[in-house]
Length: 163
Image 1 (cartoon, rainbow, N blue to C red):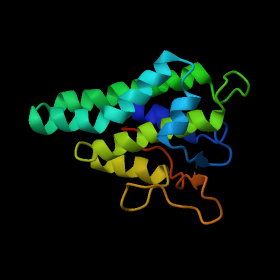
Image 2 (image 1 turned 60 degrees about the vertical axis):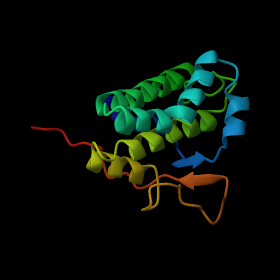
Image 3 (image 1 turned 90 degrees about the horizontal axis):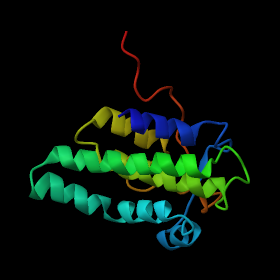
Image 4 (image 1 turned 120 degrees about the horizontal axis):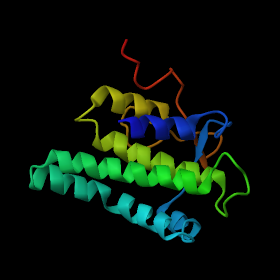
C-alpha cells in the first residue's frame, strides 16, 4: 500500500501539480504521447487489461492475492513512469508533465476502484483525493473547462501513522 501512498503524493503535491488538476486524456492520445519508450507502451497495455486480469484472478481462479499483486505491479510500473519522465523537472522528457500526471492519475483511479473490497477506507480517500464523484467512476466535469478535472481536497495523509 506504500506504493499507492507514494504515487498519490507524487502527483498531487503542489510542487509537481501546482494547479491541483488533471488533464483529461483519452487512450488514443495516450498511445501517441507515450510511444517513445517501450516501458510506457507496456504500462498502457497493462492499464488496458488490468480490470479483466483482476476479475480473472479474483472471481474465476479464486486467487485474490494475485489480483491484488497485479494492481500493485501496475502501480510500480506507474512509479517507474514518474521516475523516467520526472514531471517536476520541465524539459526533461518529450512528454509534457501534465500528461505524465494524467496517466499516473488513471493508474491510481483504477487501483482505487479495484482495491475497494480489500482496503475500502484507503480506496475511498484515494478516489476522493483524485476528485472523483461519489460514484467513483468518472472525474467531476468542471464546468469551466472540459479538458481538466480538479483534484479533491487534501485532507492530509491517506493513512495516518500508527503510534
